Length: 207
Image (cartoon, rainbow, N blue to C red; front, side):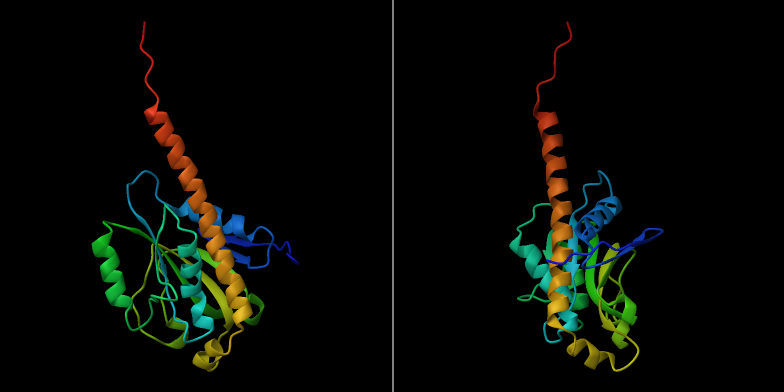
């Protein structure tokens, strides 16, 4: 595998990294971990947005499917190839998530379009994603933070561009995002196990 080392961009609470950067998985994982609230008791929920009816827009549900296969303990995952979250059911699904999880911390995952030089780049940023903005859809914002993958170029016939995006690129980006989230999950599991172990140890009696 030809993995490259590229300079990633860090601006405020946002980081951008190309999918073929050798450090991409670690960068994604570390950025997620740094954004998560500490000791709040909130559920961590990942909402993967998109549909497999459009190749470019399948980044979200592909990522969700890969995450479901990993059976993670620290993140709840919504939006897969079997049960996608898209423009037609987005509001309903988000309402359901907030009813099921009390005050969840939501990480949104979605595809987007951008400049030619940025195609293949993954961005993790604070704040919500605006699904459908690239194709002029008016949908509610989603997420406390968001992860977006630039799958193709913007500016002209966006629907057609998304439908004619290379599946190979989308698959690689989805696998990488899932791997980064999975790495963050393993870190949280280890952290939680250490806390549990510490609390389970009997306290020494003072003499």
